[in-house]
Image (cartoon, rainbow, N blue to C red):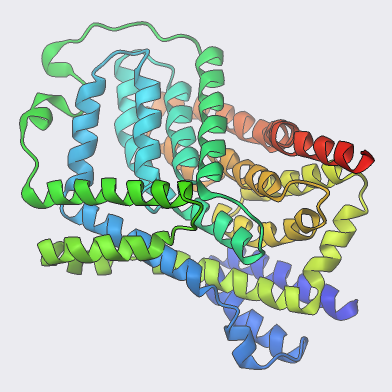
Length: 428
């Protein structure tokens, strides 16, 4: 047990030191994984390195490459302007429109890409008399919802780690849970922060986008990009409905290759936009977790968590830990580290694995509107100067309330019904 506890202590220490020193966590984790694997676990170096998640790397590289092409050739910007032009300036529709638009952008590989809507949305809220908190939560919830798409980072990490642990989690189910949860939060925000007044459209002062964006035709390569985006979505849905496990990374490479042939310049530009930083982050953490699993440390923690009490209580504790730590640290890193911790509980059959992983993942994301995170800090920074103190205070309260409310609600809705069903089944 001493070796297992030592390895866990090193894992936590590396996490803390890298965060405090602002060193790339993935690099630190990979180096530490090799040291711990060889010297504490007695593993050959090849076995340690073999734990690097190649399948997740293919997903991340393929997805970020494909959508980087769409960014480089101007397709995403044109789609944003066209969508904003259609939303218009109806103050009631605006928060839901920005939610949908931000979710769509966030679904294109990188959740933080949705932050490009913050400098657009916050001034629009000011212009039309909308409470800036409502717009901030619309954008923040949109980022969290889109982040769990099968083509985006949080979704890839969550269901990739689940599949590695042989937990049956459909990526579309995870995405649906995230969308419903975040849409519910937006509706709550709409109620709490007041129904905005309708504002008449005022010609030249329409919100960003305008008639020019609607009238100007898309270029040939941009049309091809949209066709490939639609093809990607159709392929993922069709293979999932057919009971197959779609390899989204390979699909993105295939569609990306087509677009690169059509527009070689954008294809070359996109190569430099591949999110290697996230690949290293996720890869380093999962490699270290693989060493912990080999040593039995993860099983030991899982058993300790199970001894807390009823399985539903254990699930709630795991989700609370994920939400609390994620409010101050990297959500991607937390997902990569905590999903394996939930595996022993899920594998025991006491709770539904897909429900536990979905609850843990979404709990770790909805707290990101806290001003202590990148998302929350950006939302505050893009608000009007006079609104920032109030925004900081309210986003802190909202984020901290999600640390508690998120796990309770999601575990009650997702995990508890399955647990009760399992108990009834065994009694029969």
